[in-house]
Image (cartoon, rainbow, N blue to C red; front, side, top):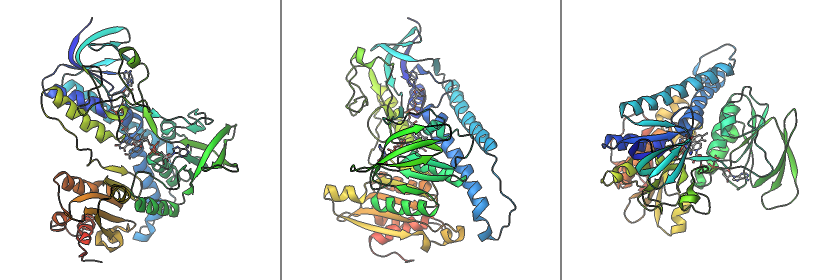
Length: 463
Ligand code: FAD
Ligand code: NAI
């Protein structure tokens, strides 16, 4: 056996690299195995960071092309240099992944380059070399779910990975799946000039989010020119030299129709990635969806082996993976690391943004919990008016008996930043009145949060 470590983490995404850093901070000797040429996992290389770089660039392009005249700013011909936009995205990614490498050096974490296979509960094989480990953490993330009959070639039919790399704006982009990826990347290419049609199996977008928000989201994206085919499934795809012909069918069955696309983006969800780890051989249990089964402390059924992030149950979000990485490292060091799964925000970084935390109205109804709703529209917020961004609203759901905040949902400008206040409030067990009585600076978008909290008690001031 080669070197031995207190901890070997497999996978250097936000779950794995953060776990490695926290464990090193707590005095453990740590190695992290990563097969990709750079650290940072899906998030930094082909996920959160490149998609946000393109969202930012495309938003700036669309605002410059269409949004400035209203402000009295006259610009000439606005042209797109997609090659430069893609190069900028690559630079943003490179800076971020190098940042993780720097942090590994700073924390004396050994990067074992290659593919890991768990040889025994106490040892990991990396491309033929075996390393010892007191603890092993699996943080191998997720991959796109394939759709039978729709063969991905990453040119004409792409996953998010190819969808971030297109060298030309497609005339017609058809997105399969109206979730996070479909709406974010659909927005990018729509803003850059593509006609975009989203085909969604369910009768609504972003399932799992509050239904009222979902409906408003669809209306707003529709106004931006996105078309939707809801309650529709894709049953086949034929690629030719010019594009793709998709065969569609109503979700409930019935007559087929066809839809022609220049590029198809397949975004119907992601699944746990465990290939090559040797889980079956060492007896690590997985569930029906291939996710590694863990207990409340991230332990698998095999002593000494743990799992976190996208490879286990829960929302597939970078910050959820990070929190789990920290909590697990602290547990391994004898501390009391913990994640509050009731308070994990979710944000769709379109424009306007959509942000959610805690329970939806539908979930509260299903659970039979009596609640009160406070809502405040951005049309009544002075700062939103000054910005010319009045689309959307803040919605706070509070327990009818105790006034404790149970959920919050925002569609509007900077919703992803605004939700942080409500995350903090919920983490501290705040009531809507606590937020309502907190002084918020004027004129800020955050006043809409205060007003929604006031509205829970029927006493909003500006509406
Ligand atoms: P990953 O980031 O997937 O990392 C796992 C790593 O393990 C990979 O680098 C992989 O190469 C490595 N690996 C796998 N098997 C082995 C092996 N056997 N040996 C060695 N290495 C191995 N989340 C957000 O919160 N906000 C966003 O804005 C956001 N945007 C996204 C946009 C897109 C297009 C996509 C696809 C995802 C996005 N996500 C976002 C989700 C986010 O990327 C994931 O939730 C997050 O990356 C999960 O982290 P992880 O550490 O569990 O796994
Ligand atoms: P998703 O789960 O967000 O959305 C998938 C959508 O596809 C759903 O609306 C679902 O009903 C639909 N669908 C499923 N099967 C279908 C079919 N056969 N035909 C048509 N529609 C179908 O998954 P997505 O967008 O692929 O993203 C994967 C995950 O990555 C997200 O759930 C999220 O956890 C993460 N992510 C997070 C982002 C963020 O935080 N901003 C951005 C991008 C991804």
